[in-house]
Amino acid sequence: MAFIYFLQARNGRSLIIKIGRTGQCPYKRLRELRKSHPSFDQMEMLACIPTAQPVQAEREHHKKFSALRSPRNPKDRDWFRPGPDLCEYIQDWGQPHVCHPDCHRLSPRHVQRLEQIAQYEKKLRRQLDRKLTTYKKNLK
Ligand SMILES: [Zn+2]
Image (cartoon, rainbow, N blue to C red; front, side, top):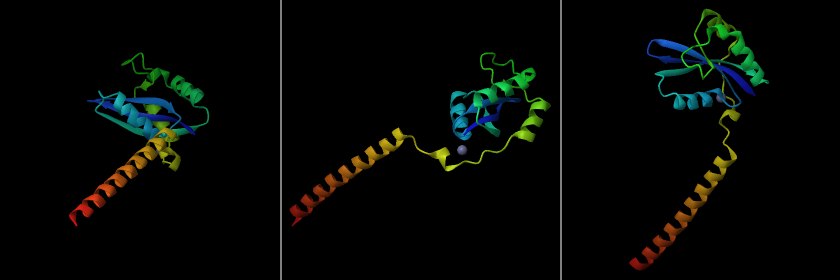
């Protein structure tokens, strides 16, 4: 499931809204965006709309609110001024995202890495056991 998400970013007294799309958990996306936009004082998820066609849905939303597009950053076209139309739309159609277990599923690479760590720890424990046994033997 993909989402159209609405998040607000604050920079001092100015507030702008990002309309974006993501195929992953919107909160994961939020964490990435916080890292990639350190200049904002605050970034918060407002609401999401689940969609099966994220590219098309994002394009439609951007078009719908194009009059509110923020001139702050002309290269990044996802940002909009919090005009009444947009705020009302978010209130009417946006839903809070409730995380599903899949949101926190680990990637295969991550699982593999965890297995490697577990094996390494097992090896260390065996080495430590052997050392302890030798040490105890020598004490007698
Ligand atoms: Zn989630």
